[in-house]
Length: 343
Image 1 (cartoon, one colour):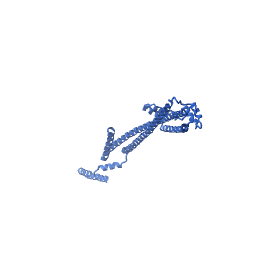
Image 2: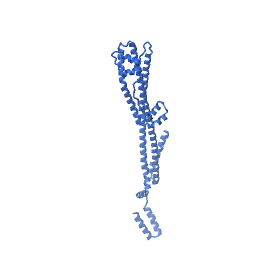
Image 3: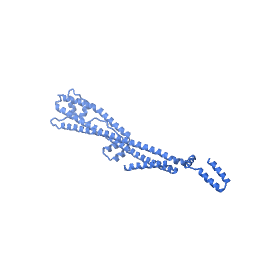
Image 4: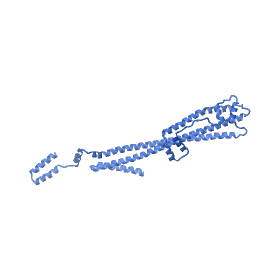
């Protein structure tokens, strides 16, 4: 329609003089106003170049990147909190094992002290070794057990299995036992995996079960022997009932002291492995916390790029809504930095 009126206007100019033509031109310009929306609509209808498409899609793309980084930051923070809570649980388990260690060492010391007190009575000397085995052999109907008698006569435990670790793990356990500095232990833990620590814990528990399976029959046999001797009034003439009873009790107390000492060492090893698990979990928590912090900074930079690109579009299109959005984005980024630095 505008083009047709322009052609008619040009034809009228050829038919009229200069002044009427200028009047008609002024009238034509007033009758065909060109508004800003019409210009924007005409620009929108024109095909956009590749750079223009990149320019307009940048805020959307960077918003997606910021959302992704925010999700990663939250995920890493959640994992950091989980590892920290797991470290607290493992520390409680380590504390239980240290309590068992202290209790058994104390119990073993008391048993050994009682055995030493019995041995102080010079009027009734104690029998040991082959003499004790021979005295029990002379007692009629004595419930003798070869393994239990050997343990009492020799005053030591039978051969018990012990947990064996790989060299990197054993070095870390030794560092905990020696109370080495935390950076040194952390460096040793780089060569140890969480699976190896789990296997070490299970190995200690399996070793404890095997030790119980070996010692329980001996302990039961010793209890039967002690009950028989304490209830019996007959004994070899060379030793006497009192000396035989005292010798058996003292030997049993010494054996119990050795048993508690072995169990305490196993509890100590298990506690040290738990301590390594605590440290490994704390290191993992620190790592996830650092990753969460870095992802958060990346999200802030992405949000800043969204604000800048929104400002660029607002300037280009001269649109108030785009300008308000950019202003809100700048305020959000500034507020986040204020909270991070000062709150």
